[in-house]
Amino acid sequence: MKTTRCAQGAFSFLMLVLGVCIVMPTPSHASTSGVTFGPYVQRVKKTAMSILLRTDSAISVRLKYREVGASDWTVVTDSATTEHAFRITDLSKDKRYQYYFQDSDKNRLTSTYTFATKHTVSDDQPLRIGVFGDSGVLSTHQFRIGMQMQWWSPDILLHTGDIAYEEGTLTEFANTFFTPYQPLIAQVPFYGTVGNHDYATDAGAPYKNVFETPTKYSDVEDYYAFDYGPAHIVSLNTSIDYTEGSAQYEWLTNDLAQSDKKWKIVFFHFPVWSSGRHGSTEGLADALSPIFEEHGVQLVINGHDHAYEHNYTTNGVLYLVTGGGGAPLYTQEHENAHSYVFESIYHFLGIEITKESLSIQAIDENGYTFDTIELTQ
Ligand SMILES: [Fe+2]
Image (cartoon, rainbow, N blue to C red; front, side, top):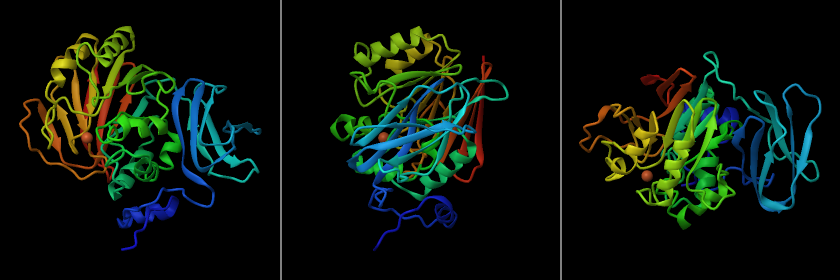
């Protein structure tokens, strides 16, 4: 049977409503423009942003950007390549910018998108974090969750892993991540973590190729941390060694010890506590929970089990599973004494953070909030 893919804009919304988006075999932007996937933004700082684009042939591109309302564009170019990655460092804090790409002949390659360098967080303007996981199959549910996240309007996005099934190849990332989440990821900085499927090809080489993590230009890209407003956020790779004595364990211990941020959030793929198909990960709580407790981590978010699970707070740490981002859902199959709420529902998490509070909504693909959690300190 000939397959169809969801186009962008109004047509894709219609497809969503009708529920007729079908798996397609080719990358989203393999078009006459020569764009393979993107654009997408990552690594937001108070005055900096990374803006990335892939093309199907090695060309030089022109990135044009300006503050919203400004008359003049700033133009930067690169050398001929298929992997375009611009680190823009002359931005201002708490401003909105717009950008688009041209080829060297000034033909437009992309639409115009906007992003923000928001960093000031207040009761009126909390930091808004969208979190989803286990999405990478190009299902209709992914488009619906992507649309709900766009309406919810997060400042940043976190992904709990298995961004690309089955083997985490470059083609799978193009088809199952960059297709369903345009234009969301063109406007909202994305932070991933390595799931077991993402790790399956060359120890996560395609994941590390397409994403610019905060440790992109260091020796180790598997784990990283960054600050945003009152939050310190850590991404781990649980497909590599995380036990005491490992490099990741030592790095995590030092990283958390050095942070004085009010809120500490750690996200990684394998679940600490779960009653889904895979269940709790043997040895994970023993290895890492003492570090989380010692260094004041309040929230740990995992994936791998394709469901939502809200566990009882244990020694000050709330453990959530958000693995309902689009892959086929799992039911409750394991005993888990920590479980408080388990829902086999496609969903994402909307987290709002101020200096005093952290609130979490679990939101389904129709926009309905089916669980809420409030943390105060
Ligand atoms: Fe997984």
